[in-house]
Image 1 (tube, rainbow, N blue to C red):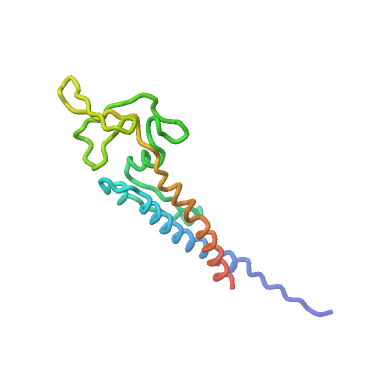
Image 2 (cartoon, helix red, strand yellow):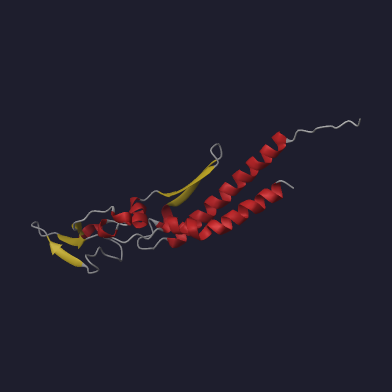
Length: 158
């Protein structure tokens, strides 16, 4: 009977897969962050400049996010326009001195200024529509990222 020798390559294959996953996560984070930046409407540039990503190799995950509170409002909308109807149902007033950007708050599509008892100007608003920068970035880049993950795995496991 002939002798068969078994060579165990489990550790080498696992290491190759770990390298592939780390490389893919870094690339995916960069691609999704760049697309989210591109999808972000520029008014004061704070939201656009605050995107970032972080790779967690121990959990094989990447987190893409924004440090500006406005990013949440841009992603999900506010008031009457909030995603899935989760916004405030009544109008509210924003102090005019806080609105430094080009686009001003509006009420039913019109910019309305009212004056409080103290004589200060306020914009009346019923919310802003969601722009879904990150959601759209993911769905735009998903097919290309899947192809890239497959390509990296094939290259590493040759």
